[in-house]
Image (cartoon, rainbow, N blue to C red; front, side):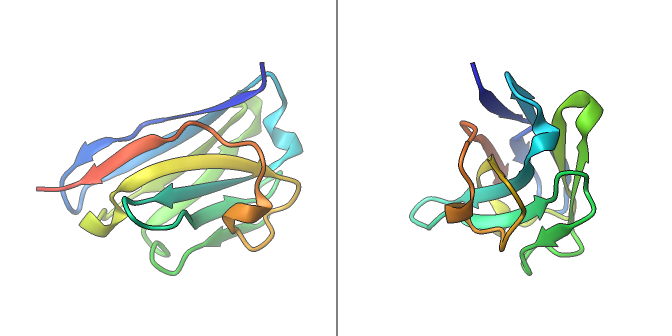
Length: 123
C-alpha cells in the first residue's frame, strides 16, 4: 500500500519547537519532491515549505521563513519539518504530499497526501 504518514505533531507553548516527520511506505520518496502544507479551521490549505528530490531546492512561505526548516533523508525515506519559534497562528493540521517537482509549493500541484498531524500552539 502506497502511503505517506505524518508524525510529530502535538501541543506546544508559543516560542517552542516541534519536528514533524513524513515517512513513505510502499514507494521511494526520493522519486518525488515533497511539500508540507497546513490547514487551520475555516481556512484554505496553504503551502508551508517544499523541497526538491535531493534537497537542492527549498521553498518557504513568507510566514515561516527563518523559523521553519525543511530537510530530507532519502536513505530513511523521510522528510522533516523543523519548526522553531512557534506562534499561535501556526496552529493547524499539517500534511505532507508528493509532486514531480517543488513547483510553486501550492496544494493543487501535489498529488499523494498523508492523513495529517495536528499542531497546536497555545499557552
